[in-house]
Amino acid sequence: MSEFIQADELQEKPYDSRLMKRLMKYLKPYKKYVGLSVALLAIESMLELAPPFITMIAIDRYLAPTGDVADGVRTAGLLKVAALLCVTLLAGFVSSYVHGLTMSLVGQRVMFDMRMQIFRRLQRMDVSFFDRNPVGRLMTRLTNDVETLNEMFTAGVVAIFLDIFTLAGILIVLIWLNWKLALITFTVLPLLYVCAHVFRGQARDSYRKVRVRLAALNTFLQENVTGMGVVQIFNREQRQFGRFTRLNRDLYGAHLQSIMAYAVFYPMVELLSAVAIALIIAFGGLDVMTGAMTFGSLVAFIQYAQRFYRPISDLSEKYNILQSAMASSERIFTLLDREPRIVDPEHPAVIPNQPSEVRFENVSFAYNPEDPVLHEVSFTVRAGEKVAVVGYTGAGKTTIISLLSRFYDVNEGRILIDGVDIRDYRLNDLRRHIATVLQDVFLFSGSVAHNIHLGNPAITDERIREVARFINAERFIERLPNKYDESVGERGSSLSVGERQLLAFARALVYDPKILVLDEATSSVDTETEFLVQDALRKFMANRTSIVIAHRLSTIRYVDRILVLHKGRVIEEGTHAELLAKAGHYARLYELQFKDQEKTELAD
Image 1 (tube, one colour):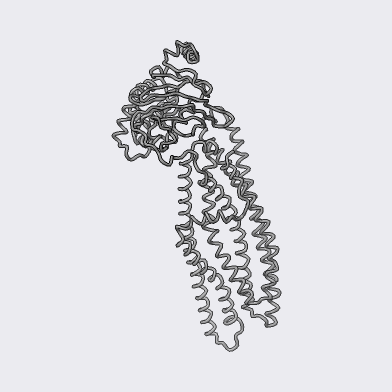
Image 2 (cartoon, rainbow, N blue to C red; image 1 turned 90 degrees about the horizontal axis):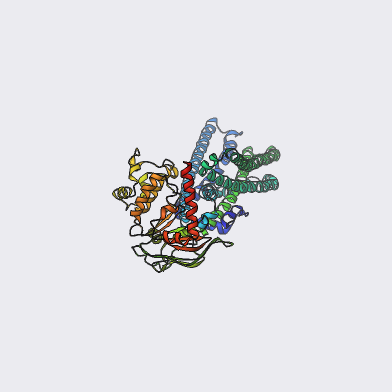
């Protein structure tokens, strides 16, 4: 299991200053907006303190018995107070609206920046990284984890200032109004702290379970949607549905735990707040009766006390947002901090724009250290030569292609192109120099033309049509309703296997590579399409260094030389006729395939 997958279980601390410093860097480009939001929060907190004070003035000056004050004066005073209250509330609304809008904008921009950075890093990662990390987990990083950080930026890291400002202001006002009642109000704080502590623990545990189960569910969904054809062919719908049900039920249970924590915590806060208000009414009422406190002051004190417990509960909620954000940020930074193993050299060599010689020198390689795939493989493909590599499944044929394209680096030995180690070439130059056509063709959602030029603006429509005509793909493209603008669907689902293969050839040829690699490129093609492909390949391979990997030996008789690979070693080498004459491993392979073909023809 990779260190990246293990990151799902990391981060138990509610706050990590190192992670927070890194997160704050994402706010730096938008510091003006953040500064505006903090200023608005300060204004909003002051406006939050105004209504109870205005209510106290209204009661003590104009509603309570006021002696000889005329009714007209009292009415005019009440109208002024009411107008002042409306202005205060309106100003608070505007401040809250602008603050919310500003931080939402900042949050969306930070999400945009972070997604771009994550995707850019994923594009740089070597293939071995994706071998060890399921797509569903990577999707969770780009979606759920980034969304969690957005919640922290919009409703946590800045909004927490509002609660702090408000708490501090209310605390000062309560002590100023009546310090004895203030002490009575604070008597419930220990119980409130215990409730908040229990709530934070329950919420933290539920958040951790939710993110782990969500990643597992995403991974399962990605695998099953991609492999739905296999699921249906083998009648595994019911079994897979059962597995999905279990994963979905686990996620549901984790969410339910979170809901239960909230369902208990907030009513408890309200209950403790009600107890405090009851104590204020009891003791404050006595002060009003004895004249030690005005009725307006008591009403204002009650309103302040109610406001005092609200930011406390909000701070507990923001604590959980912070906890979840710390976990998400650690997983994201674990990904961003992982450097790709395959990188460009500091001083890259210039790859020649001509058919090149390919040489393997004592190359050994293993995906897992305990299970080597290639053992001291050595061979040379001269410039312009066509060489085939054959062998049983698992012999290491496809691994040779992966190493040549530097999807992986060799463990021992080296691979040379024109006498230069491929690790001395820039990756873009190397892969532009080599065109690989795989057995399992991957097409992107989009048009036929897009899947040929892959968004390269330098490739013209004329060049696309020329290549399609050359590779015999134009026949089926012209039959499509929208021709080159026809959408191929996800992974080319609207096209046949042979049509997808022809598009793959066109995509390889349009970049005019100097080295051509075919990995079982015609094994899934029907007889008629194979004839078209073989005709195109002969023209395609002209003046190009070509390496052909195939199980069907009948398709490689035209090559200059054949390498026989067995258990990661080159055991035979020669032309088709020479290898048959040796009566060795290749001859046995050919004889087995010839007999299988003969049986198939007789059965037909």
